[in-house]
Length: 131
Image (tube, rainbow, N blue to C red; front, side, top):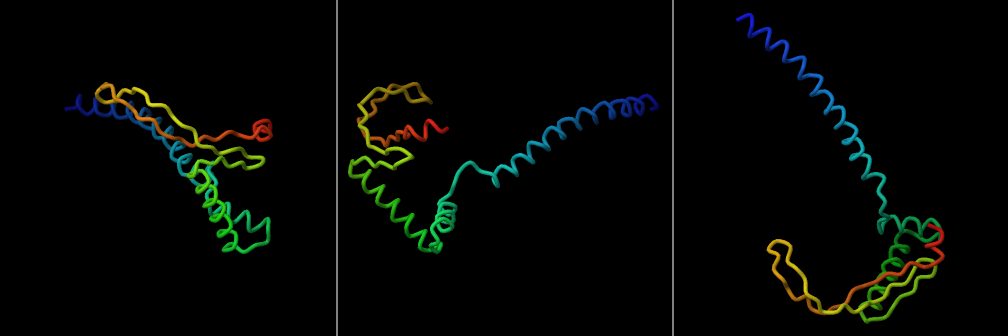
């Protein structure tokens, strides 16, 4: 009986440092995951509205209407096949894609992908040079 107690007591300290190390390694990952959503690389529409309201002196409601109207005009133009130039940012345009043969990932079956259209964005040279 003394041997079994000795074995348990010798095994327990050996496991604790090993278990403590992964917990310490996981803690910074969780902290980083929690900190990441507050410092996102994405600028949301509400953030754009707030920044435009600050720069122009418009109310947030007026800024939201202006941003929504601009986005509606851009989407309508792209849907109709026109390209939209945004000075200092780039150009949105519609490009035709050719029909092609593809492979279904799950079954490796060859499939025919029909011709279609896609939206392309070309970055302005001034922005590209400043990145």
